[in-house]
Image (cartoon, rainbow, N blue to C red; front, side, top):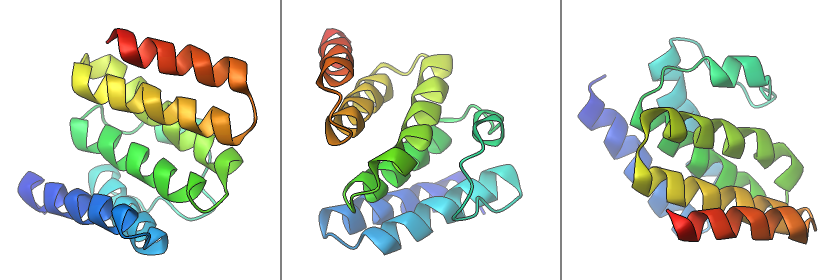
Amino acid sequence: MTNDEIEQLLIQAAISNTKENFAEAEHLCRKALSISDGAPVNEDEENLSKLLSLPAVLHNAVALRLLSESLWRRGMASKSLAFAKSGLAIALNLDNQPEIALSLRNVGIVYEHLSDSVAALEYFTKALAV
């Protein structure tokens, strides 16, 4: 699959999140991540070492952020956090400022859903500074 095809998967995932079709968004993100890594990122895959070993390419950062969003929007913020932080780590590694800002905001939202307002404010403040 080409990078353009992976980007199309991620565009569809973002649209699915917007349309509140979170299961479809999650499926599309996992498919994009599996293509990049060569191994499926299963539903129960929260192993940070595996997530952090994903190749540092922008579509992985985007896929992890969108996957995280599809989870916290369904009330699964604790499950979402590992994906959100992994996407942020990749964005930071790439020094991609727009994705860093979006990923920081996403981590802040996850912490907000976890009722950790101090951590949420910290990430929101960092996102605004980017």
